[in-house]
Amino acid sequence: MRTGAENLLKAATNHKVREQVRLELSFVNSDLQMLKEELEGLNISVGVYQSTEEAFTIPLIPLGLKETKDVDFSVVLKDFILEHYSEDSYLYEDEIADLMDLRQACRTPSRDEAGVELLMTYFIHLGFVESRFFPPTRQMGLLFTWYDSFTGVPVSQQNLHLEKASILFNIGALYTQIGTRCNRRTQAGLESAVDAFQRAAGVLNYLKETFTHTPSYDMSPAMLSVLVKMMLAQAQESVFEKINLPGIRNEFFMLVKVAQEAAKVGEVYRQLHTAMSQAPVKENIPYSWASLACVKAHHYAALSHYFTATLLIDHQLKPGADEDHQEKCLSQLYDHMPEGLTPLATLKNNQQRRQLGKSHLRQAIAHHEESMREANLCKKLRSIEVLQEVLSAAHQRSQLKYAEHQEDDDLLNLIDAPDVVSKTEQEVEIILPQFSKVTATDFFQKLGPLSVFSANKRLTPPRSIHFTAEEGDLGFTLRGNSPVQIYFLDPNCSAALAGAKEGDYIVSIQDVDCKWLTVSEVMKLLKGFGEDKIEMKVVSLLDSTSSMHNKCATYSVGMQKTYSMICLAIDDDDKTEKTKKISKKLSFLSWGTNKNRQKSASTLCLPSVGVVRPQIKKKLPSPFSLLHSDSFLY
Image (tube, rainbow, N blue to C red; front, side, top):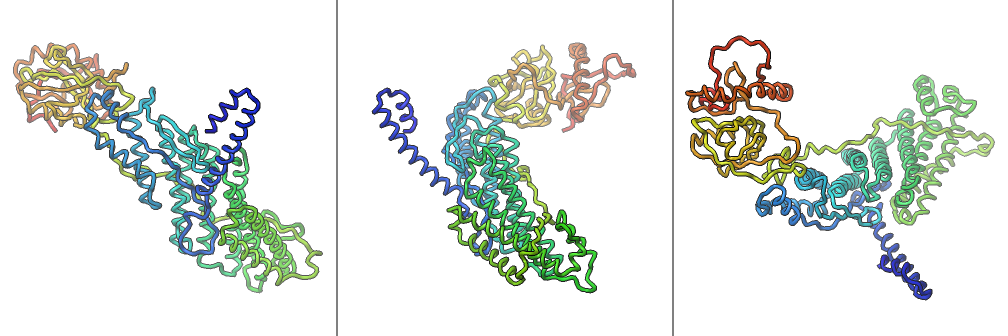
């Protein structure tokens, strides 16, 4: 509607018509903005996905899942199977249905590890589908549409990049929802929360580094960088809560540790708020998220000053106390002491300790007031009762502590409280997604190994080769494993005359699918026909360079017949003529084998041309002859 009104505004020349169109367009834009804000409120709400256990804790921020439209793979994939692989596409209806069912299930995953595994499974299958059906040089006509998780704006692409990136985003979002749902009143729950947020950061960071040109703004590099910082900040906050869960003992060294842990959380949230305030993220980040980051930065900074004040005021240096240890801890608590003060002198002087402690309390109260002010400026944060209660309780505690030690001459002895140095016993870090732990079997593995049967390999339609083993001689050797390839072909043999070529891949023998069979299995199958007529179907690569496998079945001159000989033996008589027939190609055998010596340990090396070898009295057998069963090893 808006596009039509804009086009009419451009085309209209009548002044009244233009004014009417402008008025209608303003109403449309207003309605769209209201809908956008309502959708944004649903997707970025801080209150959803929180733990169901009642806890006196500040809420964490989850990411909403991206939504998508239905996609029908059936027509496009069936056409491609028939066109590219020359197979009956109706044989793959069940596989296509399984793929579509898996995608449909990924739209509503469970908020647990099973849901993460489901999304990862689909992501792995997308890799298979991309290799099978999406050539890099053409569009397949499938349109994937995903909605921005923040604004709801739809984005569409005709390749799998958007699909794969959106699934990765949803994996990260699912981890954030798992983290926020953890019971933060237990040690195990907090450990799970830390792990979930670190994994969310790892997935989002992997998305940022792998898919750098996604058109959806929620997956832009700038936005993903901020989201990674947010997940790590929430993981660090969970570490702080885990340390404090057993209770904070009113003991000097314990208070030093807690003060520095709180300073660490405040520092990461301050850095997060700074990143959220930078263009272009500033224009698109939800206001409630930026506000909450600012609230937490001030709140945890206030806590660090409060605990520092407590250790200074409540714990006087007594005779027999470990002065050196306390002096060291106090010196490490600050980057620099206030002017005129030294750590040891401050510890021994009760008046200096109280004055420095009260300056920290004043700083804590100032941070508490700023955090409450920021929370009240945001409508969404004002409605979160537990947040208001936590901030108010912390503020009242600092005020009460200051009131207990307030004196009339405090204003005459003001000391600027230095910031507390941040330090943590558990530095959080990203955990990369572990796709290798998820088992997924290619739905379309019947098409053949991906090394050959993929979208970027152009193959001929299957050709039927009818031939016989003349006097027990197949006339060719085989190479490779799954699929097996015709490698060394006598141009005068029955198979060659029937149309076989060197480099052909064997796809079936007498209607038995051979695409996944190994060399030994194919040879065993051929051996079973003896001298009967054999029907073999082969395909060839249409690419300019032939893709020959590294594993080679050859016969090494002067060495014992081994598994690497791919000819069956029925009779060793009358081989003189066939030996002469291929004697000119022995140098080719030597070249081909030595070339692949380092690539495959199963390839036996033939003697190089020109190298002096001991005279071998034994008559050389033909590479095309069939080995006796007692010398062929399977």
